[in-house]
Length: 157
Image (tube, rainbow, N blue to C red):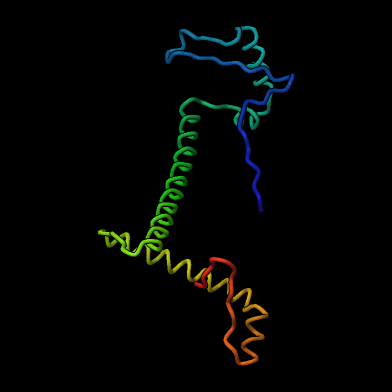
């Protein structure tokens, strides 16, 4: 299943007028964008909405920032896990291509063993689902060792 990516942006149709109001804590001074009459019109329209719609459309700065911070930190954690997994994969490939492995950390070695075990289990499950190929079945039926020719430069695992 492919997920479509959603691009978040300000969507405004012809009826929606954006406005911004910034007030200081005591409420004595306020800045209104784009103008005071346009902002008061938006506020009047907002107040005519049902209360459920009003609460859905209200955003305060701290809530907005908290929500964005939570979303961004989740994305950061997800990306960190991806990077760690790719680093392990790269280290595994380096270990398999070199004759001598230079690892001083036993934790890294245990992680490599777990990664290899997971990959072996995955291959075993795929073999169990697919089953041996028909040429292997035929060779075994005739009592011969199957020829596992995988093509140029490929070696059986």
